[in-house]
Image (cartoon, rainbow, N blue to C red; front, top):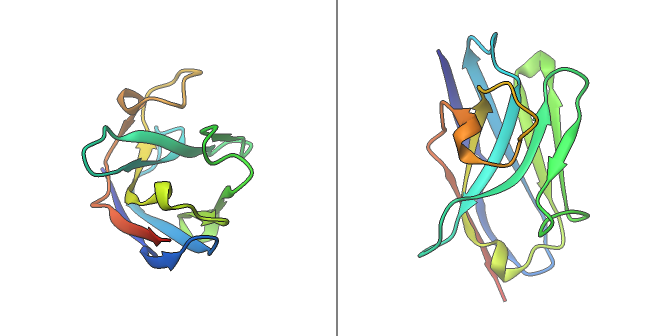
Length: 125
């Protein structure tokens, strides 16, 4: 069983930066990578970014491509999302989860499990 803990959220002005962390404990064996999703008030949870354990391939939503960078530190069992040029529409609760389904689809919730508790990101204008 994998436990995930997010951190790094907060309040930032538009144009600013934040780095989110997701620390994993327990067995990640049998999972294929980690993804970040976000949920804004009144909206469904949406994919943000993901990284494959093997080879480090990355995947991004079009809305964050070029502004967010996902990376991993294998020694620390931690995945990061560096968020730059933040916009007010990036305001949401951000969640990390491990990819448990072996497939080419990295973009939908159903591929993931062991969700963290979430961390709030608020971008002010």
